[in-house]
Length: 278
Image (cartoon, rainbow, N blue to C red; front, side, top):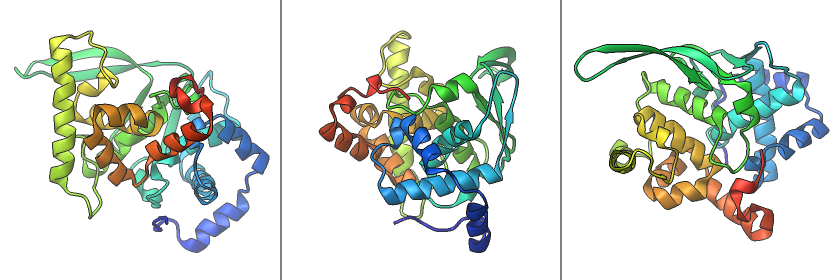
């Protein structure tokens, strides 16, 4: 059962959906490109499609040189953006930004960091995605197109997880938790796993860690990366950090591992998730 609470009033939601119908054949093509949506129930599928329509009416997609956006591409992006909110219901989870900027390739972004001694460092970094506090989400289109499979990678979910994190202010790895969740439980699970990952990399910077070592950068990146794994490689995440999976399951109110396990039981193509293309 889904939580209600769209920022749009009920009548405006219905009017928006009525005025922006989606051809079922178009939605089928999008679904075929997104294996991480496999296993959703018919009700979840219908709810997700409605969510995509409302999302695309509320956010402006700015396509820069090298990006061609058609209806299928827009839905492809929206479905990945809305999957984390599938059981949360409120479009206001993505409040604070109105635009997604799409680059044709990775982009250069000025970076600034103040170290422990107070010295400020500045450099230009190459990025495939960024989320700005009270600003837009920026995505490299090749990264978007490479997302959507059970492959431990999803640029869209990663960057929008930062936006969820920022709902409490600066990104710090603590999004607003539900009333039935305890901050102490969240902090314990996340900090323990974050420390473990950093410990492995301190011992061997080239260690083959169970999840992307970028998660060790800071708590905000840890939340974004583990959210990415939660939806695109739940089996890897639960094996490495079961308590993190449990907290994300409580936060997103979904169980992607159960969906993947059911798919694996019924179709051998899912037995090796990294072979499923997005």
